[in-house]
Figure: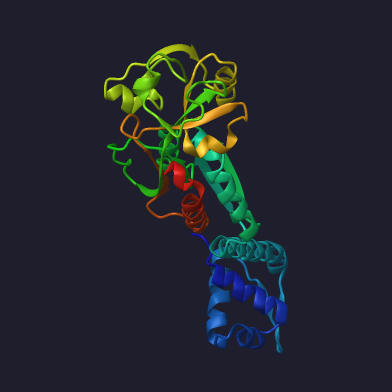
Length: 302
């Protein structure tokens, strides 16, 4: 049977003071309570731990053997209490964060910088990937918080709460010399003859999903998984591509961005996915994501 921490506490107090009476005063217990706890520990260990003297007590050989182990238990429990307290006060701990790639361009870094300034003792680990991956990791308890762009009609997985952050417009990236490069907005029909650069052969798995569902079939000639490759191809005049508004800040200077009409590709819902009972760090980071999101999408793109 495991030994109660209270028994060790009584044993250490008696060992430190050399007296049941002094130990009871130090612990705020009655002398009889301390005596009972020490006796219970002796029964658990199967050995006398103190030699009872006319005035006070002293450790037996068994007591001297037990002493460093009891001190180690005390120290480990004290360290555990300190670590648990640091989780509540955000003086320490770990926040495991996931995010879709567009959110890592500005939304997540800004929130993370503010979080680090307020809670420098909390370590933030971050993983990038698609929404489905992050939702699965939150469900599995392997991520504490994730910024995702779930399908608008899809309910969250069981045990996951979605916190709406913003509705993200879609932009089209054009080379600087493109006839539409100076436009404020453009319709998909005007770009029907363009060669589109996409991240997957399955357009249903790309930002084109709602447009494809509505019947638009872009002419795709170049497949590029990486944003750097996509935008490099656009800058070279090899085609055009869709860009989420959250990624606009990372677009190179030789590429023009034009807002796509929301009737063609609706705004994308961006949410923070959290477990039903989020950690203190996740709750604090979520608040910063919300405040950052309200500042991030400029009015002309919303």
